[in-house]
Image 1 (cartoon, rainbow, N blue to C red):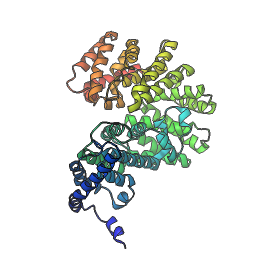
Image 2 (spheres, rainbow, N blue to C red):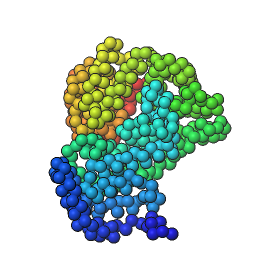
Image 3 (spheres, one colour):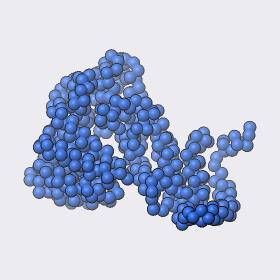
Image 4 (cartoon, rainbow, N blue to C red):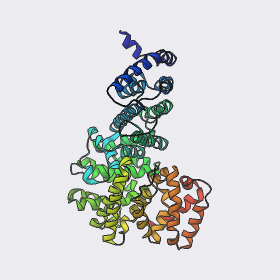
Length: 488
């Protein structure tokens, strides 16, 4: 066995590596002097090109202990981590962050593909026209990084805490890496911490039991006709699902049932399970079924529209049948706005025209169709709260104008928007918390009912941060009661 092979099977020798790095410092500095002389001779700048040797030492002192979390095989198959360390060694921390993010996204795509790529696409891309072209692991590259993280969080491959940490690293990658022009300073300690986060939250993903069970269930539904006794066991499994899991599974079953190439066995399996799952599905997810039906109709996708209608009729869901063209147009505008809002570096340019298009669509139609009200209000609240890093100034006046048009019912939905899991996550950040207080001021005059006024007062007087509102027993109970009474 070669010395290289032997080394690959040993733990990372943290102490020895640190000594070697310190010993090589003189050589690194001599190399830098030589390169700076060359740059100066060529008339190129030398200021702020690389980070100081001390920061590189910090990175190297912390990196060995971090990558000890990886097995020898995982380390051997992490080329971008190696490139990150090489870039860090010569002081190019912005390039190092870019390499780390590339490795992280590649690993996350691998985990998604190993779980159930069709299920993932059903959650990540709500636009049927875009969804129909997404089929294999290779197509995951068409899903932008934020949407990849968001959908991975929905199916709980990535935890809530991990999602927040990774979206921050993604933001810094866009603002402080070699991927884009930047003036941000990166430190060796930060890079080591971000490497540790990516290893913990993505590289070493171990799906929870319920997540693994859902993946196995979807595989079985697509591969064979399930016997009655197995269908009964699955129906019993549904009772233990959390709200988000039930909603996501409904989206998965819908995605399995509606394609034209779905086999008779698949159709029978879903028809048998759908009535047992439907009572556990939330209002937003039920409305989404109707919205997708409308979009199938608008896109002349007749076969899929027929099957979507079958699922609604199977559970007596006629109230979720929408005004097709109108709802589809509004929902498309909302999707486009959400996509622009999540574009991070580009959102300041892309968000205003998307907001204007939504305003134009709403203006042409007048009142929002009942089928689209909940989605419309939640989407508007989401973008008004910002992306956590600043206000899209040219879009904000449009958001205020549209929120200013809310009637009492829409304002009441906005008041309870913290019940939405994605908005709760957003409210953990400082900017959205400030905008939440501003939102309450905007909707205050619209809330005329005694119950809504009392609830507004309870929300304003809540002692914690707004992301914890739904953890308050009384507020949560009042919210659920109102949603069940008004959105069913």
